[in-house]
Length: 188
Image (cartoon, rainbow, N blue to C red; front, side, top):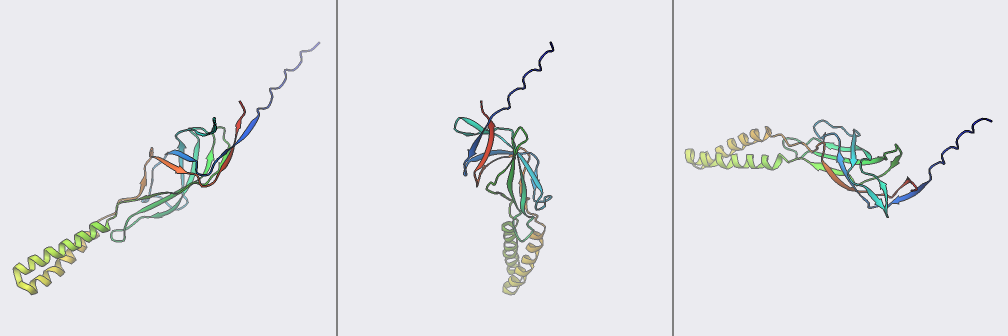
């Protein structure tokens, strides 16, 4: 008599968990994203930093990959204002490779504005020029000095470069989900 083939292991059973809208995801950015070298639709990845639970079960385990894309990039300018970077995450990849579509609030970062500093340089230079012109040439000298000072201040302001909007690798962020998702997890 031949040996009987072993019984195949029973297929694992799964249950569906509904992660509610407004659930919070803690994420850690994997690679630096900056307004100086990023384009709209560039891919952005992050890892979930803490388990997301539904009841007493883990629906989204820490370490799961979340993928998103850049929605908007504004590099800012010397006079026109701050740089800006906007990202939205759209795909969750669970540890077993299962992908689930999701929608989160956007992540928005802005760089420091060069314009406030620019206005201060232009205004300060104009005032300084007016004072110096008044000392050297009276009222007419004050007007000429103010114009020369403002021109010099504008030139100085044009050398300003705004800080770039940036999400550095390792940065942790907290996002709210805008829609519920359903994930299947093994029944214990």
